[in-house]
Image (cartoon, rainbow, N blue to C red):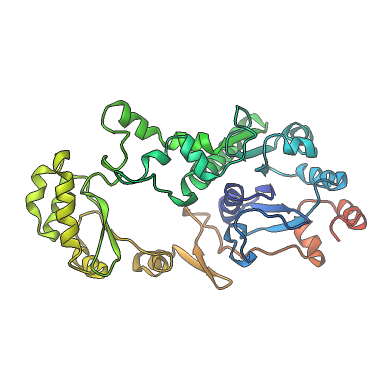
Length: 379
């Protein structure tokens, strides 16, 4: 059932990093109940629910949290929960009556996880924003892209899911570990801007050492170096070469028949010329031809695959990196565990009043559930 089997998590419905964190916990065996809105909300990118893969592996209950009775019902569930997660603006759950003080008074062992863009305090705490804004303020966006071009937008992986989801997850798991000795819960304040700043720790050190420039596209791992870049092939597809170490770069150049470039690997003045030579050679073959040429060669090479190509790659197929759930190909749970492997995820199952006992039986007593039914909250 996964290493988190037995962990009970309440997720107050939101978008982006919160649902991703809830999915990861559920993938690893936690029982997660998503408290949905009763009215459809214009949140995120609209899509058929079947394709909102972040909602997999858990059940939901629709509740109007502006109704004090619904809030009381959630608090009843908090009594037996290990974790509550919310992603509203600072102060919203407090106004609803579901703030951390109230919840921790009901359940002192509760881990109360909060995910926002700017954090719970500070001049921007109440400002609107999205992933792009958070990575911009934390210095990450400026560092991504090619020389002489605008900053490149790395989809919403860096802010939402790198600086947001993963830091929220780390915080929750760390708080759970600490609770095992103290017996006490606490609040985890995960701000995407903080997480992105943390992700930039190595670049800050490199910059302070004078080994990284503020001019993007001129450094070792930002497309400045010829040995760490992507190159277009004759079929307009791409390959990646990340041969930072001399021995790997030597192997790459051997396959490319450009051995003479090795002597000037770290001569930055000659990087543009070397890149031009490599690009010209790479354009002479297709991506798949280069993949065959580099097969088995220690040159830090990989073809650049599309979303629909990646699941079919032999390595990922053999490892079972992707699974098909309800007709939709998607990543399998990660990471992997030797003794407690998680089960195959299930597609998101919307609320079904006829299954209220099955969905809420682990959260409410029969009496509480019957009172909620009679009140029309779960009917």
